[in-house]
Image (spheres, rainbow, N blue to C red):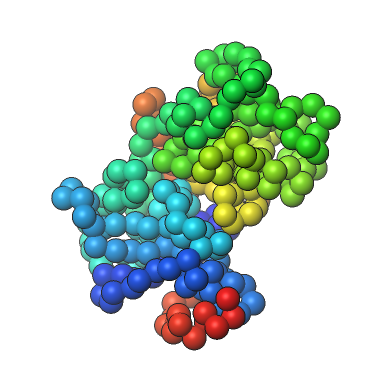
Length: 283
């Protein structure tokens, strides 16, 4: 499946037990020896009493992460298409709590992403001896990078997972491939971070590229779109709602503070069966 070009392998862990390991996730996500995907999504039995399902996300490098906005839309579409439930909206358990997902009549999915947080502690960011400035309601931190003559100015946003958002003049020429991995694995981020590059088009529109933690640059990032929109609003650059143009498609972000809503597509590409353990020999 894919959500605006962000592609996933979605596994049914309800009808069969699936033990997902880092090795298995890497093997499935391998675009040469496996199926190929940005992330692996596992539909599982919940432990939370109020949840309909549990939703787990594994990056292509095998690491498990808290949340994936584009994946969440595919998650609910998969459940409906596979006949696992007819409930709409659905409540899904993720690492950090519950999210609510609603499939609309026009085929899109609305995800209640929950609340956002903005302190350095929320993204496990070490601010010692760093400079910052106030822009609107936001604190913009100056992050030194070895590849840059001057520090990169980032906004910190936690939406279950951590994001560092910077504003660029031209998204097409932004140095995502060069700076993305330096920010993502910067030692000041104890749990790594998703690095967002945002071009402001007008008060309600942005263009966005994201270098995702554990996956590299993807065609779209749902939580990254949310983080960029919220950061832009807090900086005084944007007004709610925000249309986010990614390389893979368009998302709509509505920040009804404190709750955050994302609307976008979810598409099934193909279905099949795979023997996971036959793939792991190439790991």
